Length: 85
Image (tube, rainbow, N blue to C red; front, side, top):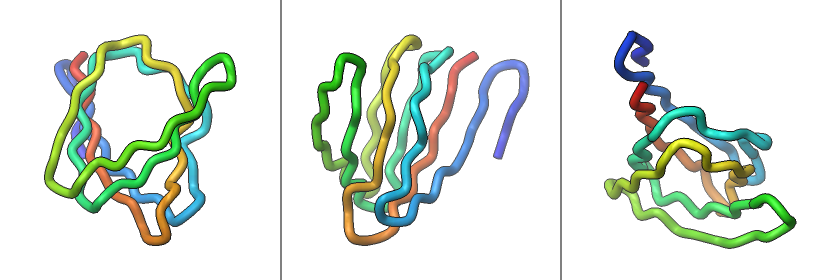
């Protein structure tokens, strides 16, 4: 959506069971849920956890987060990620 010297803004849309693939965030970032997001997070070392991010809410994380995010819900999952460069 936007990719300039200061921010990268990306919309993600995932069908049930779709996943991001393993990745490490290179920038601090903010996620804003467009739909209710039922996520299964796979973390380093084999840990997993389920989280639900309600539509219209947001959270932030620092650079360095490493994970795989899977849509664990029965419907489509959409969110916007804003990376702070």
